[in-house]
Image 1 (cartoon, protein in one colour):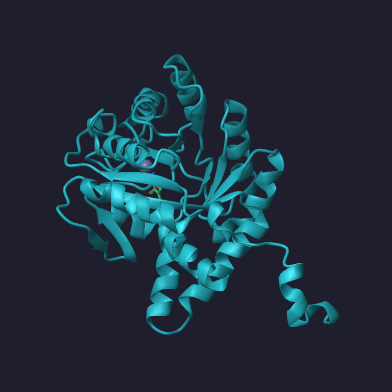
Image 2: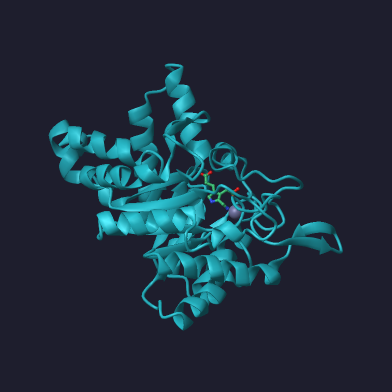
Length: 321
Ligand code: PBG
Ligand code: ZN
């Protein structure tokens, strides 16, 4: 085995090569921000004021990152998440501004209600026989409205992250009826009830006031349920599936990719924060860990990777040339 591990052969024989084209950069747009603010739990990530969006997108584009995933922090939260489907909402405006500045940038929008609901859950909440909880079917219309409003503002791909049963089918028919049959759906199909979303909830101000998300997200130990979630979304018409978080769940990523449609992996805020914290302490080398984790995520079968390291990776890959 060692003969071919000679340094001269290494580049020739590398099986998995991470590319900028694989990466999607998440962006937080904050309607209440006057200037960009660093997110304390995610060093190097910012909440951007709407006015900064064209510059931030141009910088990413020029660096070779050609896809973004948008999250909004609205001025107002209520019990109907009305700011989530406002045609002049924070994500809607940001999507429009990006498509206007860089028409070829792939704009993906997160379709969920948690940042817009006063209670912080992902859809409409009501009383059930087991107490207050996210109501499935009553929340579907809301997701349709949000997705449509994003499509109307130029989103290329809508990404429902609420883990409601039937949401992909519901959004697909709403988009088709609205004349947006060319807008794709990337479903957060296999989304685990993970503690690794903690820093994001801080970043997007989307923490919940009561309960948790375990009644809609997948338990981390359940593999058949995890695969079934993606199979169902595949049947409902998802164009791209997703496994989230990424690094702890690579076994499921390789299984779900056998369904045959593209699979995204989301390296989440907690994965980012762990690497950042260890690096800040001098215990790990940020660049090396980030590149290794992302290469392994690709090796396991991700067709695209959503990562907060996207912009940095672009720079690191340029240095390696
Ligand atoms: C909204 C949403 C979450 C993330 C992406 N979309 C948070 C959650 O489900 O609580 C997490 C992203 C991250 O941690 O980086 N539903
Ligand atoms: Zn949500």
